[in-house]
Length: 126
Image (cartoon, rainbow, N blue to C red; front, side, top):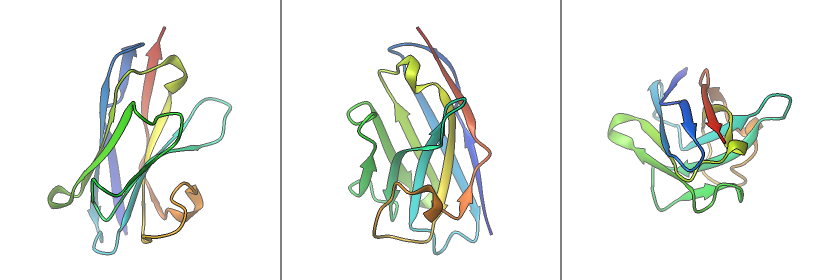
């Protein structure tokens, strides 16, 4: 089993920044994909970003966050970060960290990720 714990959410004004963290523990040896998803009230859970094999050069983003969000990983700490800049009110959601034992294919499908964190609330005020 793999446990994921997110932190770093909060309330920020539009244009501001937040940094989310996700610490993984347990049987992380075969975890290759780490992703961030978000879910706004009344909406489906959407892909935000993914990092593969803890490599900052192997990252993927949803079009809605490209150029504003940056995902990065620290393999030694088993921790993934999501730096969110230029935040907009439409970024308001619960953000979830996810982990999967795959390293190819489509990274935006939530069903491919086996493990999920409890989520952290991000609220952007206008």
